[in-house]
Image 1 (tube, rainbow, N blue to C red):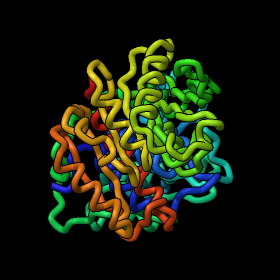
Image 2 (cartoon, rainbow, N blue to C red):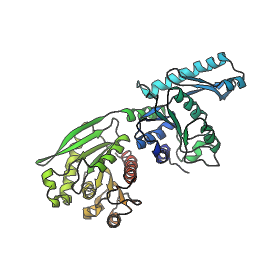
Image 3 (tube, rainbow, N blue to C red):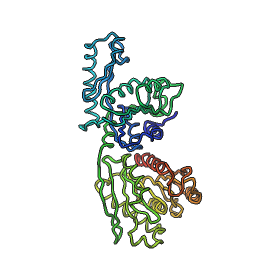
Image 4 (cartoon, rainbow, N blue to C red):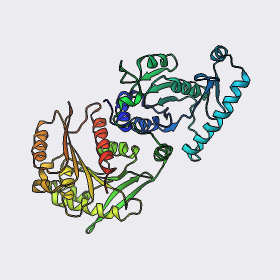
Length: 425
């Protein structure tokens, strides 16, 4: 069984679609089942998400045989060859079109809730579905987006029948389909969970992708000092992740900002803030004062829970270097609401005996070319009693500066928080 559900399928499809990232790329989900998959792809390649709402115009007495297709803004595509083959005239086409146009407009109103269609003229359109059985809907979508002005058309799906995928290559400029099993009978057989996607879920995912939310500079009080930060909370956020920097780093860390941006695109809030003031950073001992850093993180968490935009959201921690020890030490405190922790190249061993008291699900990410830190993480993991996992990024060094290494970290963190914040109380 290749895929757990559509979200899992979307993540794995995104790994094969990374080359589609670009400033002019738009991801278009085919409602309904294709939209959860498309959401994951759009998040991974940092592209806007929309739906392509199409309706096939089936031939009289052979509705599976498409005489053409219709889309938004009055777009209609007519296949004269099929019409002649089916013995259908303009009147028959118009009768079916009228019925399908009404359903198309109903779906557009339901899914977009008043938002206009994203313009496609001159852009690369990536049409995403949860699978390709016959390819007829994807083929109709290709025709519609070309008529809407798309410069390049790509069809992407996690799994498909080999012959249907091959036929689509004649319609699209590119087809991305990682799984094309010979023994293909239905899309659902390749999913453990293939529950029907509701119209409400489609609308919610589109809202999350389009919502601006909160993005502002904030200050956190930590005793007598004020700590500067940047709070970003998308509308309908799944949760909010606080970043605990280490080794003299702060809210401007390019690596943590890159991870935070990936979480924001996935519908999660983030708080990037300085655990130490500029004067405190000058004293190297402060960087390794886990009690001080954990206390500051706890203060920031309490302050965050007092803000209306984050008061009810599940909380996660993302810690790097000594910040990882601070995150785990803070998570071990009684009453701390954190539900999940991710450590990037961290020093969880510095949390000491508090490791055994951590209840938050913890992911430890270490570079394969960072043997000393890998050994320390292994020892720390052996002491933990919570749900935990140690993941090694092959070839990555301590700062994950190798090509693709930081992107891997961001994807691992996104998946961990998505899985554990979504089920948090």
